Length: 192
Image 1 (spheres, one colour):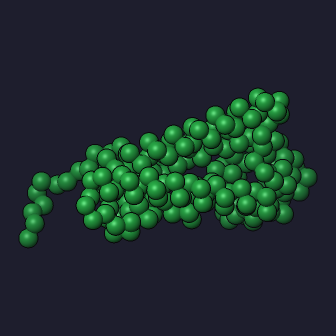
Image 2: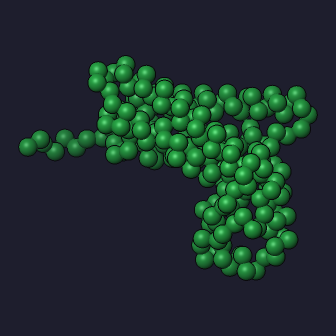
């Protein structure tokens, strides 16, 4: 089991903010090759949503933890694989609710409900991290990079953002918290 399967980690505002930031990078086609300095509106959106998710995950996680552990402690009691799964189901439902609300708003407005400030991202907001990104940075014109960013940002509605964030979160929880993996123990290991 992961050494980070504590509720304090799974409900961390910084963790959720990182997931949402990585989602924007991914949807803009930037992956992990660039650092992105977000426009203030986008930063506020991500920070606010991370705080909301963090509080909801903490509240639900505390309820899950106290159901099974008498003296459950937020940052000292590890979650079992079943508890991680239960918390993930709660998160999945939260993502689904946000996707549905975004789609309803898109339908009602007749326009895409874009992530706030997303169209403001330009080449100046990016810093290349990898050698490949640095080569691209030098060979591509500012105009081409800005056009690509604008094309990708115009497709980044909130429902797509939430759907991508859900998938990215699932991938990370599968890896970090061993979501849906059986706990394996070696029968040869004996307590001394």
